[in-house]
Image (cartoon, rainbow, N blue to C red; front, side, top):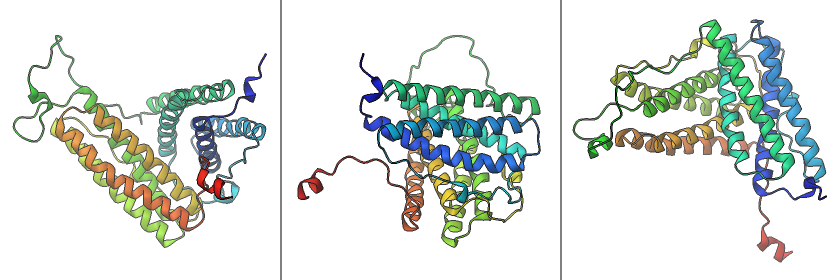
Length: 334
């Protein structure tokens, strides 16, 4: 019988594994620090679970890379974290952060499973997806228990099935605008919440950044997150719906270096990339023109911000090259 593990890795499998590896090295650094600082004994097992799973993922991927003679990425190491630094985030925020990371992991590995085919790689991403679901369950259940979980707004249930009869359903710039749909509310709520988590994280990161360029990059990110939070919150408030709170007060006043500037810039740039994806999904789910166009107008400034983060990483030699297609022109010249 053919050994399925001898099948070459496709470009999708390479990219998914490479990205997951970098992300798990980051998760190892971040959760190692969180574990040192956590005071809430109910949160501690969740951090331990996240840290152990990231380390296990790395071992599995290393084995795959070694079989393929693929150079193991460096990612982030113990040089990128100072576990002895003072506490930077509250336990409540750490729990919310882990919940948000589980959402990103769900999205990334769901997408990966739609692309990968080699059995060992499929099994790996199924494993990661299963653990992400468990992390989501653990964080949600504890936040509900502790009263810190912020639910999306409630709306009235329809009393009958109806169909759209007029093009006014799509209107948004002129004339009477219809009320937002449940799907539009969901995306507005989630994008306020994700920007709130990002803003709090950036505030903490900007306090501990070492290079002035990195500080300025992070300050700009804080301002962008605040702008986007207000835009999406205003849509909800106009409909007499509540908007999620900010998490800024859950950041301490510590300025001691916790993570390397390399980790700070990479983490925020990666989160911005996921934010662009969230906005893209929101456009597809928002038929009211003013809402869809607003998301579309915000994506370019996120893209430019992410590009600036990438340029910073290139400038300081922090960015590892991902797997690339063969440059046939260069091969011919050789």
